[in-house]
Amino acid sequence: MKLFSPYQRSFWVRNILLVLVIIALIGTAYKLARSYQKTVLLGQAKAHFEAQNLVLAEAAFSHADAIQAIRTEDEPWSQLLLRLGTVRHELESLALNARLAMEQNEADQTLAAYQNYHSLQQQAQRENEQVAAFFQQIAQNLAIENQFGMYYQQAMKEAKDQVQASLDQKKYRDQTFIHTLATIPDEYYGGKEKKQNELEALFLQYERNKLRDLAQAGTFAEVVGSLANSHGLYEKEGFPTEWLVSLLERYAKEEINQTIREQDLAEFVNRAKTYREQKSILPSRSDVLALIDRQIETLFQQADQFVRSNRFEKALGLYQELSRLEDTSARLTELEKRWIAYDPSRLLQAQFPDKTLDTLMTGVDHWGAQVYAIGWDESDGVLYMAALDEDGAAVKLEQALSLNRKSAIFSLSDTLSSEESPIITVEAAGKERSYAYLGLVPDLSRKMFVKRWELEADGWEAIQPDQILVKNPVGEGEREIARFSLEKSGLVYKEKWADYLVDAEHQDEQDQDQQEQTGEQDKESTQTEEEQQTDPNDEKPADIPALRTYDVYAGPGDTYAIIGQVVEAGYRVLAKENGWQQIDFDGTQGWIRTSVEP
Image (cartoon, rainbow, N blue to C red; front, top):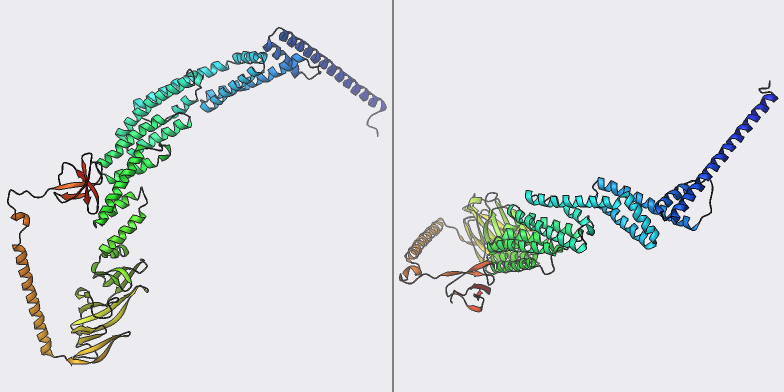
């Protein structure tokens, strides 16, 4: 079955062709109309151009150029109008961006738009008079310069008001006015030089008042930190900062000198450390940094003097404080060596800091130790030892002793063993005899005490480095005065030396009691003689004054540290300088006032 008859098909084809013809006629008519419109616009553009009205000429030409219905042959004046169209588009875009930046108070984006505007202006002026004149006309129509002027005048007023508000309220955290004033172009100040002078005067007044207020209410670190922060802001904006550094130097010099005069070491170190941290912004010949270096050197001299005079704790305190400013590791090492050599018990404190020990003995050159100290903790019955071995390394030993702790007596045998490796003898109350004895030798290489011998007896006596006589020992030699040999395995019984008699024991006890009584009498006699002695100064006539003492300074001036004292006529003058005398003070140099006569 056929859907369409031949007549119907021909009817539809005829209608479609008719529609196409109508569309073609409409398109042709539109193109003719647009071509006519473009021709008219180009004619207007040419007329305006010849009349030197470039704004209207460019506007007409821009509309004509947007019509693509026909193409026209380019003429010399059309190329210029194309260029003017580009200028107009750039200015319109710039005006829009500048307005948005101003509305959002974006100083950097506004300045970028301002700089871009002047860059385009200079480019137009370099091309020819027609482009330059057109640029100026379009800029005026868009009111670009007026907008910039109003914005920057308002920004300048608000920034200066912010400066005054900070001074009035004494609040200096918000310093965004520095950037705002810096981004305002030179021409709004009357030129680059006038801008620099005006802002420098404004900032100087601001920083002086800020320094005064912060110095009264803040710490040294807060004041220095605030000025350093301002320095960074000014430097970032390209402003000279010598005046600000001068303010900082004057303030810091007075503050640090105050700590020197008051001999406040901890605060001097704090301020010196704080100021040194700003070294990058300070001049290469900073007076304050030089002052700090001189005072540090003076303090080191004082500490060294303390070491030489064996006042180690004072020296240690100075070195520890100064370690925050300088490397004192070498000095501390030397201090420890001298301190330990002077007082070996320092070794015990260093190696067993959590123990409170009774120092039993100290010495040098025993058991391979350069220096040693031995201590006893009665509470836990442990013997402790600290030493420096042949290489100078610290070694510590400890040994628990199963003795009667409260009765323990320690000694170093002068006869037994060798002079280089004597035996440490411990005597305590015994269980089966009067006494319990223990002989120990430190072994530094194994970091332990080696037990050489142990016994209970009523007494003993060394007769040779390897021979002892023992009274009534437990075991072999009981009820004898027995001779023992000290061998690697310990004490070895050799023979009976004599019978151990009770009467002899009683006689020994009587002799001992008599010796103790004689000792007490001698002690009382000595005390009586000491009590009868009088102070030589007490024997002086009343008209002879006591010797005066004078403070000794590390340098010629009150600002230097006091390193000690000398008595009247007890020193030798080396030199004189500006009202001060340099004297010989314990092998080094010190200073006293010239009013003091030797």
